[in-house]
Image (tube, rainbow, N blue to C red):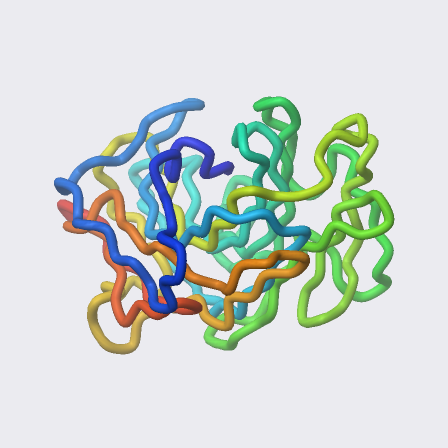
Length: 254
């Protein structure tokens, strides 16, 4: 899902070369909207760019079986300044969507603030071997990227072009991003959930999941992430730099 309500206050000071870690908000601050409650650990940057890339650890977080229909994911998202147009790529554990408890590659997009659907809704497949919805290996790292090129928003996985969202989906109006965010997300039916983020370890501890090698394309700004967590009592961040951070957690009241 989009992060357009997560990072509306995120800013990056000019000349900052290391990550800015925001003060931790109160725990149990999940945002409930679109029928679910969302918790985030995110690194974001306000800029103007035509693409971005990250390397992420792929994991197999356990979902809260008492709250069916939820998910746990890590992704890269690019948005316009109004935060109404979005292109997303990442991995997700979503038993309702994929039919199992494994991590799967996914793509998603928003147009004029309207939801679409996972792995479709106009997405044009070009790869013969990499497809949205396919299972990905847990416990290993993979590269994810989004790039606006030739009038379309292209999705890359491990440097291979998977396919693209045609620029015509936005009527040609979305040609660059002003907000880039890489993050972990948990969606559940209640604000407090036992669904794990990342590999289930707190980002502030050792052995946790991570996002690294953050890059910008078509931008005059150097990469400089602002890192924050909405529910630090359940999921938090650690080891933040300008281009990387650890993230994750076990959830709450488990």
